[in-house]
Length: 180
Image (cartoon, rainbow, N blue to C red; front, side, top):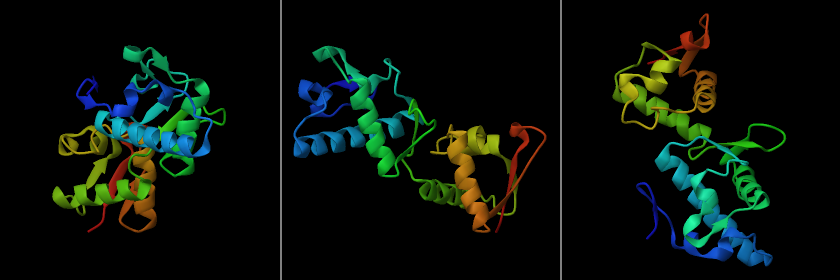
């Protein structure tokens, strides 16, 4: 089985037709599902949050072993399928960059609540940057989380009364007070 670093690629990655959008609807639906699963799995295991459609160097967009690359149309089709499923969002109206949600925002919110509970952080204050890169988050899915995703999950929890977000003088000073 072929690998990208420590990531194991599925069998279809070595099958040239899967790098070309298939014309038959049933085959294309299967192809799109395989690519959606691959993109989500890869992004989750490699901690990738944003994919640029134009990025020829993104490892999943080509397979040098079989001399195949996804066309721009195929890359956009697979990412658009993730968007329509709520597993990604376009970051611009020209569909050049895509925010990948291997966890939906509600799932990220639940991960944050579990993190707070496991670390005894109820009724305490942390900066947003500490949540993303502090020692408490090392070894968790929160470590290195995309700031946009983190802020959306925190705002969802704030709406539910689970925490309060307060602004600092800079983005690095933004803080969160967790409720009990």
